[in-house]
Amino acid sequence: MLQLFGNKLRNGFESNIICYMLFAFLVATAQGLQLSAFTTKSPRVSKYTTKSPSASSQSHDAITSLYRLNATNGVTCILMQVDGLISVRYRNKLNEDVEADLYMPDHPVLSGECVESNLEIMTMEFKGFTLTMTFKKSSGGEGWYINLFELSYSSSNPIFEHPDRPNLNVRLTSPSNTPMYFPTPVGKSYVCDKEQTVILYAPHDSGDLSGHIARIYLRDLHMQSFMFKDSGKWGPSFHCSATGSYRDETAPLAVGTALAVAVLLIISGYGGWRYFKIKKVQYGSME
Image 1 (tube, rainbow, N blue to C red):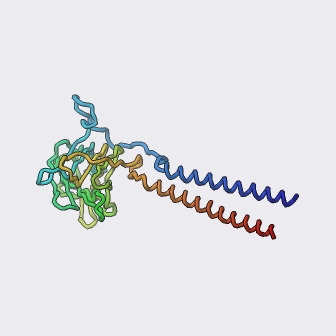
Image 2 (image 1 turned 135 degrees about the vertical axis):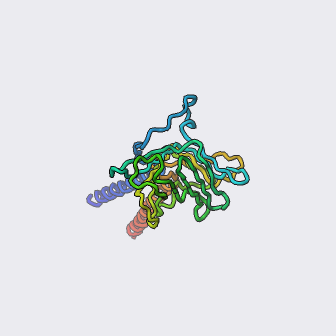
Image 3 (image 1 turned 135 degrees about the horizontal axis):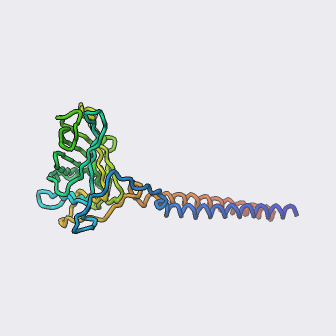
């Protein structure tokens, strides 16, 4: 009787283990398929109000500016559509830290370079400011990104009211420890409706005396570089996530798959151990 009770207890315990393993397998699989869906969405906090569209149009295109840079052969190499604002923090003669804002215009003076296969540059000039963006390809050539933002202007620009240090040539750049902005596969266009912010400082070795700090706010961003099609149209979209990171569905799937494989190995190992244990018991009983 005691042996029968012990067998039932052992069988019930082993059944519970199998149930727990199967449950873990299902949870792991679900995590792999749905991990990206559990990203916490942060509220949009904006520095500014979106540019007012013209009275004749209320469409998305009316509140964003389109910038197209063509190579010498007439083929578009860089295409950007964005609702952008540049905000510069400076100190005035009252020793107050204030900010001066200006929108990225619809029709700046565009120039750039699209000669090298791994490097492209687009420069915008407007209202005494020069904004330069340097695009590069990844080491393997499978992706592109913005490597550097650079903003140049005079501290005596009329946008600054009573600056404490006028008549300075200011040059601000994105930090060198953030070398990859908006990484995107080659042939695809980066799309993000979440506001992106790029902070620019004076380089450490520049001897800057202005003390200025700039922020570039980019909303409803659609951008592509290293365009190789003669049509000059957008490639397939590569979307950023709700938190500003970049959506790659293969990573969650890989994690879930690895967990599922681990659970399957445990179940298989337990099954093998159980099989040989039963065979051993049966062999002993026969003796």
